Length: 311
Ligand code: RIB
Image (cartoon, rainbow, N blue to C red):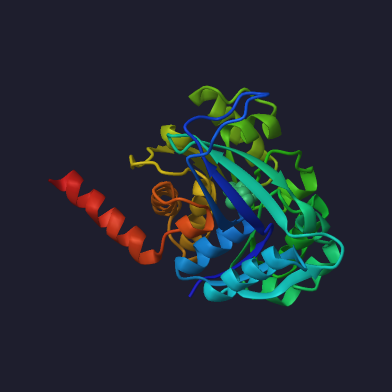
């Protein structure tokens, strides 16, 4: 079985369903409200576990009801949460996804305990990282915690996947320690300094980033599909068309799918196709962590798409 460790954020998502996003100074009635588990790290952990990986989470929650809820979710999903620390001073991370009628979102995040995840706490999880095929990082955890994880991974030949979301600068050292870099076009433009608004620009941005370390660079382009660069070759994979309910967590489902497929030794085009299906399926369900698909969901979805194409 593939083995994946996630170092990252755990949030409670307070989800407001709206007809449209509010303007500044405007107060809007919500069409619906839900509370769900979220946080880029936790979502990716749930994705990896549901896709069949032995999964461990390294993160931080507060000593509060939200923290208890998230630890319960991790336990229910069969995720090793022994390295999720309970912060005495800060509460659990909270995010507020605002969804419009098309399922598109705007999210406000209060990092709280996630911002206190220390390099020391990450290094304490070195044994867990050492026995993993891949360690997944995002940017809702402090940069020094991510660097500690990447260094621990490199000491044990564990591959490092960095999902550079949300956008913030990444040091050259971090890029050098990264084997798989996943980002969207906005993050790609910010990290590479290239204008990634055209296909040519995306290719140039990917090449710039590849030159700085990562063997695999994957740039997600929403409904435009996915661009990936591996060993100098550039490829595009189209997005799957689905009925979108909520796009929150789609990128996390994509990352979880990519990590598990790569850990299983799948060739990159196959791994990207699998990840694409995971991202598409996550858009069809409300909530972030609850929308992560299972291995069976993805197999059924891909088989139906193949059948349709053959018909
Ligand atoms: O990637 C989606 C996640 O971003 C949400 O679950 C929310 O918690 C924010 O962190």
